[in-house]
Image (cartoon, rainbow, N blue to C red):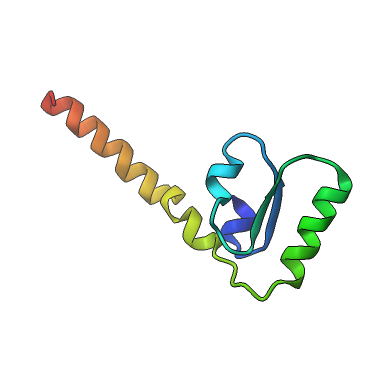
Length: 82
């Protein structure tokens, strides 16, 4: 997530929420396995690509302010009893 926020290309193995975070984000790839040749091929593909790196857009909902606003909304909704 930090690399995406920095506008870097990202190649990652499918663990945790990686696939959900990177799916459809140009300049990012998720590999199906952790074999060096699979990861290496994905790295080469990203580095040779002309596609824009859209990681910043993809992690925008994770900004501290955005997360805090969602949490406050949940508390406000709970206090209203809805």
